[in-house]
Length: 376
Image 1 (tube, rainbow, N blue to C red):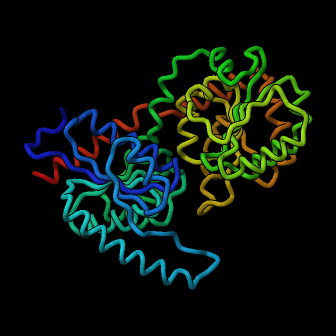
Image 2: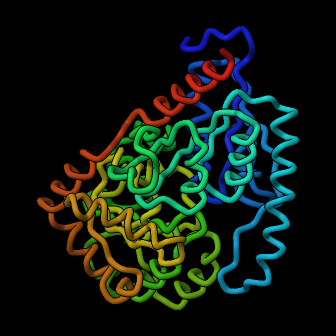
């Protein structure tokens, strides 16, 4: 045991909005519980967002704040947003006063701003987990009062005080690292042929329109290619894609699903992965040593996905196709790369070198250290 406190360890973890924020947050919580089984962990998320379901599914309590992001298109809407932020800070103050945490962790997402700001004002140590290679505005502001900042990329002293930074990497979903199936068994689970090169296409839990349109535009090429594809379309696009596929002759070398729950099996099956460049996805690809083509989403703050992708491309650890070029280039490039054993090996070797395998545990240790200091 790292912590010898007589009092129960109590920690708030705040943030969410996407799986990329929620999965690492749950991994950190699990790592804290592995060290301190009696720890009491409370999540603070945003009302109506994905974390309000995923966190209870993982066995933790969560309270939602009525928060939303600023609108770039409609400045008048931001008057309401500012009012909501003040309301959230008041609610966060009550949550913190009632729960009495010894440390508060922010993983990014709307809720982390008011929660961490309020905690710092109340004298409670805060830890920021910055996933991306380019820090967002909220975390840059929160960093001034944070005790520790856990990062996944080099050079983050551009954004944060160097003496607060700890290089930890991003926690990944633990079940991905515990896959027990072979590549052949994994491919068989998708009803495909183990002797064919296999591409896994993922656009996040909700999907990625450009990636999906790239596949739809290349159905004839895929059918006659001698390669096969496992394609997670995302729930948002599944109906449109089903309608488009219904117009086409059945393609035996294409497995299509709106959501793949057994991602450990899907990754094991894949010789090459096509993915967005969210920090969480990249960390998983690094840990698993998967050759990949990244298609950064253009619809994110400060274009941080392009910066994430370039951090890998510059180390020969990934290939990148711009979103604007995807429909003309992506599938043709993927079909070429997946049949080039030498390039696949090189990409796999280089991306695995970037993996930081013990992230959740290192962050958990830092949270517990802050909690102990706060009690002494």
